[in-house]
Length: 289
Length: 209
Image (cartoon, rainbow over all chains, first blue to last red; front, side):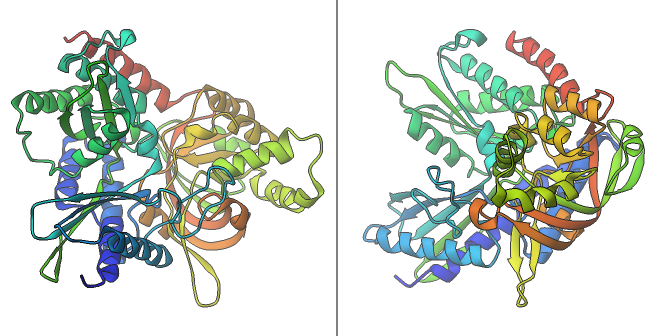
């Protein structure tokens, strides 16, 4: 395999400085729905102006470039150790070029490593798949949205939420109410029902890679996604928590087998700056989307 | 809802004239400061019996900047040019509520006039704004490139090695930094209003109606 470090730097640059087309379009739709002259419309205007400027100047959309989370899908025979080294080298280079803020802090000493490398930092998920090409998905997820993400255990007595999809609906609404504007609303929700506590959040973040306009293949989940999108917006928390019509502009849910004793709902809140990017390598040709 | 241009240092009457919903373009010199900075100020200056000798110079510098001044909850992306001069590349606000446990004392101790951040703060900061003549200015979360354009100069940086780039005190000169007053010195808070209204909606939605 060729050295992919420079291509990976480009993947990081794209993720940090530009938004996926579906996300930007959703923000424009949200802006058009708000009352002209309202604080919510003003917030979305500023957001869109910032996106345009960041793209033109190739500077980060948000200074919190978060934890770079890499989901790597590779064909059989790929050295994941080589890939990991190249990704780490790309992260260091991207930090030097100010596409990423140095974000890796040692919790014992309080020291920032300065180059975004640390124990468990950046985050990697490798998976061998049946396709003949390499796919690298990158999500830059900031701390504000990570802080308002939440995991519930059903049944949840205070909300009278039981072990069914109605219980899931209740705890998600509670999480979005608690988040208010603090996770940089309007947000996108990646939700995992089931799994264990650890992989629940991993799967919840995988859901954030789905295009906003796709339809969940499971009819029950498709209906729940639609219902939650509606209900979350009924909370009227609005852009930045200023009040308004769009609190959430995407809800993506996956169901994963659970233990008989456990029923977790893991909610990964992604800020409006839903910075996902994808790189594919087919026969030495590198492509981005 | 009015629009004001204010220059730091800001007088108390200028702050008292502001109400929630007003737009303000801020100019002048301010400092960034977030989690590590607030903890440091509380431990070394505010709750300490005496300021450690090694920190005295920074204490005096911060007194100069923060008296009638403004602190910005922000951890920027920075770049150093060939001459070693720092530039802000991306500099939107961080979530302010984490400083709720420190902010009232910091406002009172330094005689501050404002805090810039995002997401709003709680009842203790709101009370401090009322008592000491300060306001909470909301900057647009994630509007990092836009706000970096308003930062005209990095005047100094303190505690960069110890706290790291995001957490250091970056002293910056800004021009027309756009913010919205979401907590004023009269006890009003947009964040409290939205939270109350959304709580009512939540109760209704949980009941499934």
